Length: 421
Image 1 (tube, helix red, strand yellow):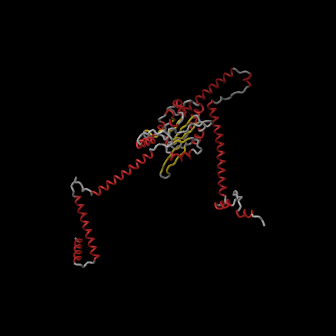
Image 2 (tube, rainbow, N blue to C red):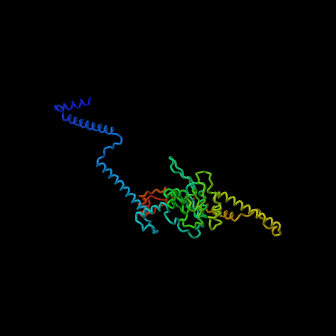
Image 3 (cartoon, rainbow, N blue to C red):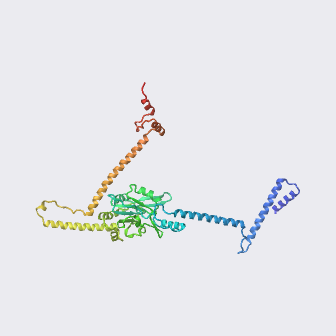
């Protein structure tokens, strides 16, 4: 009521010409605002009183056109990006390999290549041909990374952290005498390379394979040993995930996953069994592994070794008893065997471990020597008093750069070279 009265009063004043131009403009603006407010309130009341099922007023034609154009532009942009990505990732390899999809339509061929890159290894031969000569190893040992050699954890405070399994260094270095070691992980190369550089700095594992070398089957990454370019009769894969070698289970040793236990010796317990394979050199390791199927290999092999030692000692004792019955003058004054000799397998194991210990000791000495030289070079570089500018000036004059502790000021050297008058 008060607002209406004020409005009427303003109109009356404007008609009589008593208001200023500014007052008239304010009154006109106020009038327009009042009319807009009344229209808005009336529109809201009409919408609120519409019965259920009544359609709302149709949008303007211009608004529909703008929305349709937005949908078309968005769909076109997404289609362009998808086709471009398909053509880029589905292009044929440039390493002279045969393209089995060359005769198909370019888009269909690109799609098939993308699918193959996802589900199949990037290369038909994952490893180069075996080396010849004294460095060739007769057997290939493929070993997993996650929960086999390391265990990874993540938390909000530290992020990703990786623990190294106890005995990894000795296992890799010692087994590299007998096997061509290949670390095969289902992690991408971008993530695994820094870990492996820290885990195996001396590269006892000759080769490293990553997720790009696996096959994607049934939502799982599978390591197809047929692509290794090695004789499967002489390939052993050790993995904590049996699904990883599901295509060749006869070549696999399923390990118990390591979850970071500090006193674990599960990896080292397989060394005697792997030693025996390397020493005895069977033509095909698959029947050997089949004999231990479903068994704890380290425990079963230790039991079999004990049985072989028991039979060996029993045979030696029988031979000694037979010799006592046939003693003569030569055997009376000849040397006597106080204990049975080692089994051939134990003798080879002893020689191999002694050779490894000597080689490892020599390597440690060389490493210390190299580290000492590096530290000495750093110390000398720190003692150098020449700046880069002084060095360039001295080289431009033809003067040699003296070792640290023997350098002389450039001016003093020049004075010594000047002839005395």
